[in-house]
Image (cartoon, rainbow, N blue to C red; front, side):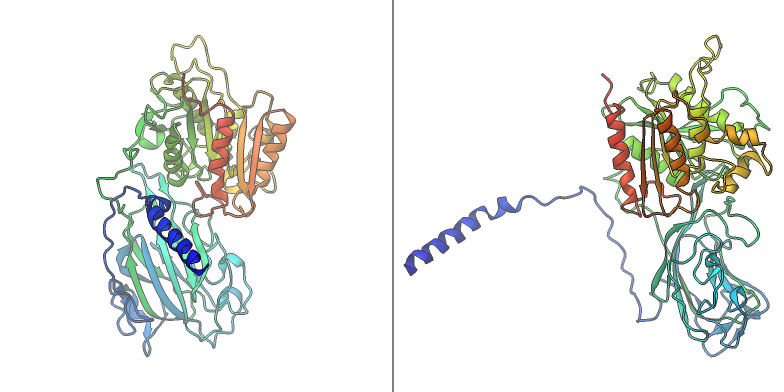
Length: 530
């Protein structure tokens, strides 16, 4: 019997060896040829890596303008008299800095151990003695000042050394000074993640709302003097190269720049001049002909009607739509940052839909499958377009003017909808309508109050953690659409801040793209042209 068992085991072993390779299958390979990452020595434990730029080593403040006014101690420096700025300019970077709040300081709130790190001289990460020292959350230690409180308070007692490690991605601006991509920051305070890829709404200031103003790709770092003798040591910074790592033999098929198309052939209505800021336009992203489904979408990026987030709410969205066979056109519409208020943005939105519909044959589109997509304030503009469209002028000499401006469907991400409400995003309303808008105009441009049975079908998504534009906006629009029997689908995700775009950093909210594809498919919008 023992011999039989041995023969059985031997047979099984031979069989497994014979089928081993087929059972394992074939290794998946991406087909991408990557550049070999350069080697960087991490340096000694607690010390800077070998490629770091040393800004302060405990002895020499010559790397900073104004550094001669700070008082050198034994391996540290004490802030005094003025703020200091690095002589070298930086953009995308990793910054390490160590500080200690003065133990003798008996102030309270913002009056204790106050300082700040200003990336590019304008985006502040707060330094403060926040150990058992209550103050407003978006002003405590490791807050992005006036924009984002830290996830947790990781402060040590005054007098003890603390560290901050900051990973910063600088904003990018287009040639016309519009925002292509916002700044983002990750912060570790004493080794604890307290800011996780937070996208800034603009510069940080005590007395004004956040706003982006175009600037150079690299600017000096600034450390604030706020009247408190905060100590600093071990300051170093690494420049981060965010260039693509793929070799040229594996390029993105859709990486060619978009085609720019002026919205208005003649002078735009309400134009205040003929400069670049007075000339709205589309950036067109067409899919490959074999994958095109015949559907087109005009994208309206957000930006509080004061700027345009044309990167994560424009180009990145367009590339995604392009990848599923949908033609996309990012609308660079007029707004307060360019000197325009209502009705100029809405006029541009109407013209964008008309133009795409007019060019449907040229762009391989079905004229009855032209939709609109908007984010944040751009979502308000898209919803206003869907509730204030017109049928065109059949007798007009301009073929574009003959077309309807009604979008055939709507996709809205964390949209501003309601105006004149306690939860309205005040800055967006002010940029659009001024400080004291007429009550009738507020009602007219509150999209949830303008829904009719002719409003096109809508896909909505929002996040419960959004404090910039709260989810009550999407809920109000959803309820109004339901009452009017307009087809609508709403997703509210538990996690995620405002301004997520494709939401790649929040996996649960990133699900919105899959849900949107399913919704579009159910409505026949992804069926290829016959």
